[in-house]
Amino acid sequence: MTKLKDALQYLFLTIVSIISVFPLFWMVIAATNTSVDISRGTLLPGTNMVKNFTNLIELQPLFSSMGNSFRYATIMTLAALLVCSMAGYGFEVFHDRAKDIVMAIVLLTMMIPFVSVMIPLFRMFSSLDLLNTTLGFVLPMIASPLVILLFRQSARSFPKDIIEAARLDGLNEFSIFIRMFIPTMRSTYAAAAVILFMSAWNAYLWPKVVLWDNTSITMPMLISNLTAGYVTDFGVLMLGVLLSTIPTILIFFVLQKSFAEGITGSIK
Image 1 (cartoon, rainbow, N blue to C red):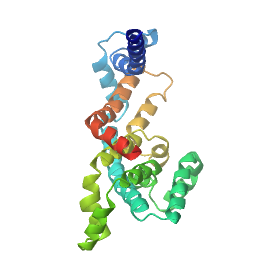
Image 2 (tube, rainbow, N blue to C red):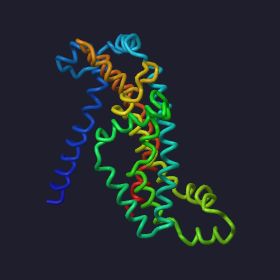
Image 3 (cartoon, rainbow, N blue to C red):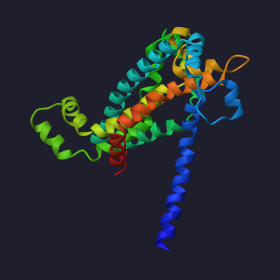
C-alpha cells in the first residue's frame, strides 16, 4: 500500500512538473520556428531562429530596450531595497501601537488597483517634469508593501540585545542598520531583490504611461509593439518573449538558495 501511494505521488508530481515546464519548452521551440509552423502547433525545433532574431532587430530596438530594462530594474531594485529595509527595520525595532496602525494602512494599499491612482500620478509627475525619465519610472515602485512586510518579519529575528549593546558602545541607529542589520539579513535582501527585480523588469502599464520615447522603451513594451501590426510574426514574438524571460530566470537561479532562506526566515 505504501509503495502504491508513493508511486501515485511520484506520478502526480511528474505530471504537474511536465505541465509547469511545457510553456517554457514551447516558448523555446516556437522561437526557432516560422509563424506558419507555430500556427500548425509544431513541437519540434526549427531552423528559423537566426532569421527571427534578424527580423526582431529590424523591427524593434532590441539592444537599447534590453539596456533600458536592466537600468530601470537595477536602479529600482537598489532604491527599493534601501527604502523598504529601512521601513521594515523601523517598524519592528521602534515598535508601538501607532506603527502597527501605519503598517496596516501600508498593507491595505496592496488592495488598491494601480489604475485607480495612475491618472493622479501622471498629473503629479507631469507637473514635476518627471515624465520620460528614470526617476519617473522608479519613484512609484520604490516603496513595496510586500517587501516592507518581508523585512519587518525578518527584523523580528534580529537580536534586540545586539542593538542595545551597540547603542551603549555609541553607535547611532543608522550605523547599526548599515553595519549590523544589513549583513545579518543577507538572505532576506536576496529574496527581496528577486521580487523587486522581477516586478520592475515585467512592469508594463506605468512605463507605457510615463515613457513615450522610442529610445526609452523596455522589453515588455517592445513585446507589446510586436503585436501592434496587422499581421503578427509569432516566431519573432516568441523570440522576444524568450529574450525577455532569460534575465529573470538567471536572477532567480543565482539567488535561489538565498531566496528560499529569506522567505522561510520571514515566515518564521
